[in-house]
Amino acid sequence: MTVTATILANAATVASACISLLALIISLISMFSSRQALRLARQQEERRQPLLVPYLSEGYVKFEQDHTRLYAFLTSVSSRSDSDNSIAEIYLNLTYISAADASITVTLPSNSQLAAAFPGTSGSPLAIPTHVGAHQTVLGWCYFRADGNIVTSAKSIESHLIVFRDSHGIDATLRPIMIQEYARETLS
Image 1 (cartoon, rainbow, N blue to C red):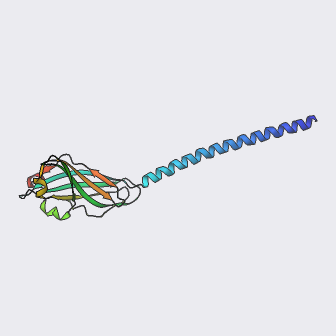
Image 2: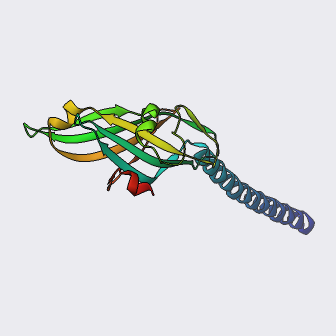
Image 3: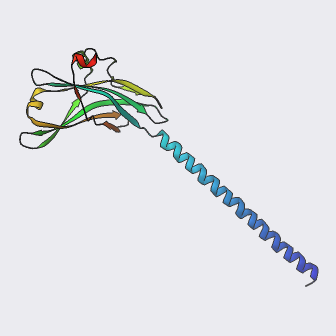
């Protein structure tokens, strides 16, 4: 083999090594770019997932003569999603301890007709269903009625939990800790 043939063979080896190195660099760049694109796509998908976040502004309870309790909660519900959503159901889970020391939870549906029992409250009832646009907030009153037979059979009321169910069947909850007794003087 001549010197020229050896030089050409070595040049070909060096050239193929350089091309292989260049191909490796390009594939690494492509891998990092595709990982970043995948991460961005996952973030966008997460932002599209429905997410309602409720807030409590005010909460009142009114005691009727037949031991019935009427509840009024001024709530706002925000959508933190990039997609529109809606509130399909609102209900109150009232947990109490019965005379037999059993913990019982009663589900009370929202009833906008109870608004008349709370004169002087500003704002309108939160209608069902209510459209909540992407990154928007809706505000309204939620009203509930606990019949006297429920309240009189309870030794103590343990907790209140307001549940907002969206059109996807996903629940967002709000637990009022302190509820004021309703009186006209409270609102003035």
